[in-house]
Image (cartoon, rainbow over all chains, first blue to last red; front, side):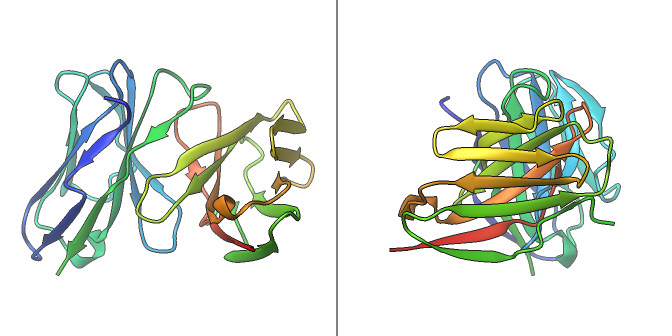
Length: 114
Length: 111
């Protein structure tokens, strides 16, 4: 596709529900990132994939958060037993290589936990 | 501990004048800096970047200045246009993939 595509755009989940957020990166992009952005804050790093390998998951806030990219393209961020503090925009981004290459962001998945 | 700070939550500038957005950082190991622009309900869009070996980078109406001794960078937009109204994020990195972001500055261009 032309850009990074994320779905769903908006999700309202009841506390305790599991959610799955999908990211389709730009075709051919090796690197994929997930960020979490709370209201009024800048994005915060969650995890990084190079192809199918998850090279860094140090930003995942708890073991309720899990990300995968099994075939090195589409990625899914899963949040189990959602809590109210999980409410945020989840941004996916991709790039063709290392940091010197521009990182392109999707529009985000807006999660509200009620 | 906020490693990247944008101390102005918002800035209002007259159309045609210069907009100056500021960003301070605390980690002297940062060696790559980026500015992103974000419209409501959209993801951030890359604007301009600068490596720590430079002190200035220019791209059209946008210029980024880096003062390493002061750990300060700024984004200049001249002349400012109504379409520049957005939230601007400063981000920094230490030669790796992980970007550390500021909280953003909302720029409002008045006609």
